[in-house]
Amino acid sequence: MIELAPWAWALLGLGAVITGLAKTAVPGGATVSVVIFASVLPARTSTAAMLLLFIVGDVFALTAYRRHAHWPTLLRLAPAVIAGLLAGFAFLAIGDDLLVRRMIGAILLAMVAITLWRRHRSMAPATGHFAAGAYGTLAGFTTMVANAGGPVMAMYFLATRTPVQVFLGTSAWFFAIVNLTKLPFLAGLGLLTPQVLLTDLLLAPLVVAGALVGMRVTKRMPQQLFDRIVIVLTVLGAAYLLF
Image 1 (cartoon, rainbow, N blue to C red):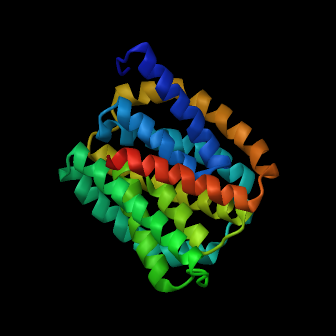
Image 2 (cartoon, rainbow, N blue to C red):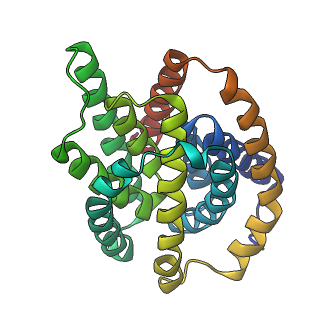
């Protein structure tokens, strides 16, 4: 098991609860978990630890929203996401922790700026192949190097003005598939160590608790409030990673 101070374990526990919430209620909240884990653990180690906890959360997200997915959107994103995953794998093999954090932060802030600009100009939803290619590639890249693809996809779904239930259902299937795909890559890099596995075994029940709370919260959440929470959490997480 990874040896940490009590305050560090408390932070990881909080991050685990937020991970569960993010999977079933507030997709942008996953950025907060990524930031917490990256502040306590080395960036590459935190990527491996977060991946396993995200997979636990994926089970509950699919249980709650699997029937609301929009499969044409997933199929349209697939080629770009695969390209992003491969690029992220190559970068993760050679990039250092600081460079990874700052690049992810810059990308997330750019995505927020683009989304807000489009809304301010009252532009049509970004449903074309160019948008799917751009967001999909970035999502694949960022999820591979730092498990930070959630905010990128959140910005894509906001740009396409996707309803809450469809947003959550499509995200659930997207990340369940992508996260399972990432497992052999991280294993090949030697990041899924016994210490990481034991640490996640302790934190997994907190992810479950957060996911169950999130399933209750989302049923009462208006679309406008949902959108604002996603944007604010994404900006806060990106700013921390960047600065």
